[in-house]
Length: 473
Image (cartoon, rainbow, N blue to C red; front, side, top):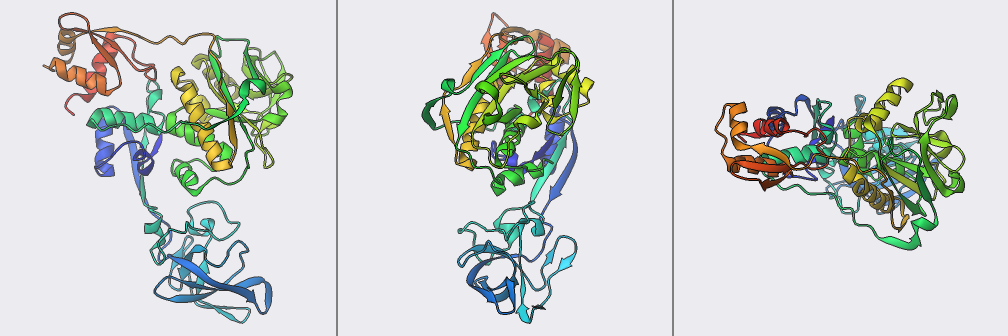
């Protein structure tokens, strides 16, 4: 599990070095396998503003730009068509270096002097967009070093999350651990949504034919979305943890999966026959083309997400090519669900489809966090695509997912097992710091209810282990 320090700091204050963070997480049971500090792959690039722009006298596809860094003006020959007078842009002046050991030198292009280069994201190595010059926010300080202005330095830790700690397969999950270690306050992502007057129940429906395999399925509809690249801050977050940006809709689903640990899927609503979602088991020999373009021949019993006629996704593993988000998609059905971990594990192995979603579902996600993640993703999709969220949530929850409640904990038993003298109030502090409900249950006894995200805590010995790994902080 890759965790970018800047992303982690969105949810909790971290005032120690990356090395100390890694050490303290490891000591608390989240073993950090590696730590990598990163920075921009360019040097000497400055923030500039375009003062003038006119056609090149001897080349129809080139322009002559005059830009300023506040200290000096530079004349640049540029072929990009997306720039305007007043734009704030990255300037690589003479002497600057770009990824690939490219050093900028004075040049003459079709007879005109060029004293540097205006850069795209791809040329700077900070994104994949090579379609034009990177346009910076107007409040980016002109003349500043670009790396400092965009705060591009970061540290990324790689945590070897054990199979029982699926709650830590998210940035917020790791932030929750840091809160328990340090006593810092966790900042929960905003999920408030402005809804339209059109009710989702009038547009779509969900039927769960097999609640054993899918105890809970929720959905929202977003209309009027415009598909395009995600904002730079989302793309940078995803790339920092090894995910490739695709488009603003798919990127949001991946962003929220990494943020909250809940996989999601977005369907192009126009390809959902009858506006329906039907969750069922596959039939022997049923065929399905997944997003990777491969046709899968399914055995009986694989969990499928279908519309009124056909399969549109292998539940919890991968969507279908027949309902993917396309450049002209406008209406989206957004899925957030809880799938049976054993079922996902079995199908993932059988089909050799080890996706990030399956990795999380098969370890067990928080069934009570399904709607929170759905709302978070819907809010972000509306923000980055200009779409509107229809009123209400479709929430089918026919089979409650059981979680441990009121686990007995004996103070004396804790110290007998650990060979320590942990004070009673310290035990309570540690457990409450892990978001557990701790209730007195007689002399030297407590009844402890873990949060629903902690699927690994079932017995008294599990509580004792939690106290042991955090005692001393």
